[in-house]
Length: 322
Image (cartoon, rainbow, N blue to C red; front, side, top):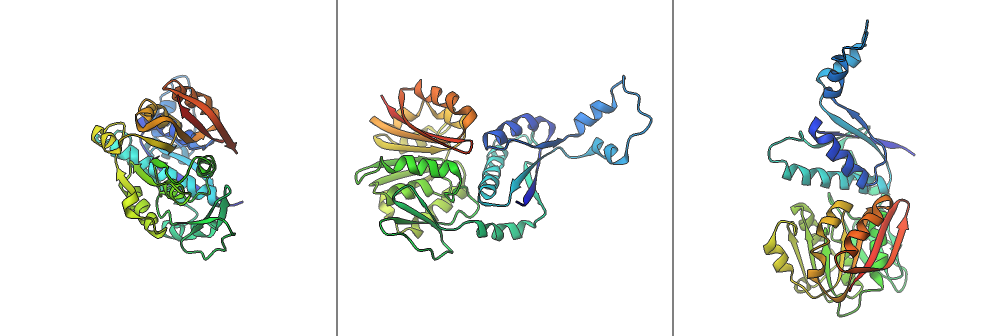
């Protein structure tokens, strides 16, 4: 397997926040280069140093950087998308530039090459019993009895290859029928609400905090020839925008929320407002180590667990409003 080096530039104040968020994205290892740490080392009065290598001395004025390595495969592609979305969100909230420039640089491959070369890892595949997901640039050969979900994630998360998305689609499949009203929170490329509508949902409302994701989701909905009168895509943050929460409304049969642990916990008091009695929520994007913590928070807001799936360190859970 080949690996891609990803440098994430920040500031000393951003290290703890970023490393915590990266772990929630399933990244287990990283290295940190920080001038503040090295200067503290140099100022250690107990140290007896006759010689320090010039390369080490260069750390005294380096830019703080967190480095991770991603596999050059479909999972690496999705993780890179998630890192970019994370940084974009954090940058929008960092109005005083406390956390540095929050930008990514790739090593071993040019940025413009990566933008196209990652497509080689995205091939058509089946999910659950009813869907066949394929990129817009592939012909594919859809098995009989399945619906084609055509997707082009562009710069947004959601090809369907990441375990979080697959698990969510698999758990959703048995909950969708012709009258289903679906809410997709954190829609990314739109793959979940589009999949839900192809499975038979009557109406869908999708929300993402990133304007770019909302645009891409609309484009993908059009690729799948969905009736524009039956779905709505909005950009916004339901934790901060009461007008958006009001616009979303209530009476939904199913919510899918493929986000990250801390955001799911923060949203959990709002989930019941959107659902009808006995409505279903499917939460995903959770690393297995934090599954119990997130589930207990959601349960405390009026839900019971009715199903769960895990795959290679990721978990998705289905709960019913009680």
